[in-house]
Length: 255
Image 1 (cartoon, helix red, strand yellow):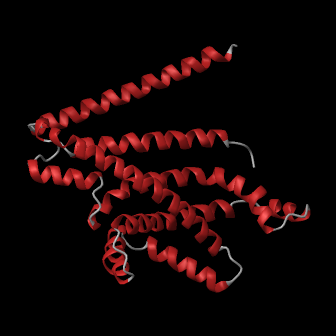
Image 2 (cartoon, rainbow, N blue to C red):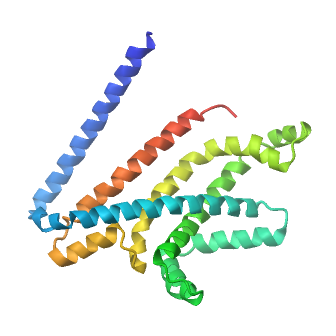
Image 3 (tube, rainbow, N blue to C red):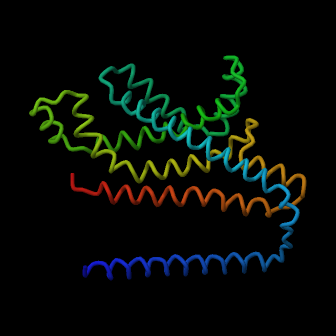
């Protein structure tokens, strides 16, 4: 019973800090825009609100599916880099280095206009999801590998001592501990995936950024479309970061 007032006071203090930070940042942005005397014209982009909403929902859907692809691809690459066969390790390592060493925009252009066309695939949404998922999956593979390799050898020896095979060792010993250690990096990469989805407009996918570009070209409004664009991404990424912190707290046990 005595812990409840303490928790309530802590939450109140945290909320006050958030409000104070928001007020400080708002005042700073207001001062910057006042200094340049920018003339806002929100009425010019208001007719495009439904298009913005459509683009936002499209971005959310693409990002969600690409997240699933990136996690699966990253996990497979991690297993490949730890495989006992040298050719498999070399291939997976080469894929990781190649993907991480080149810009996403270049991969999207080559993947869609060259590779997809050569394979007879004319679905920008499909190719965009696969390419975005593979790009982020290469980074996740290294995050997963680092988390797995951080598990001490003594625990692996203990697993073998009690008769667990390799699959059981991964399931009951390695993955539960590696999951907690990989959460911060994984969350950051998934947030990056949502923001990187803005590059999908380069291959003709009409997600949020593309809709904002269309509205900006039609209305000649420089910032009226991009300020809501930034807020739309923040609305998605902040809850994701909060969820990750909750999960980290839930899995915060000693290993």
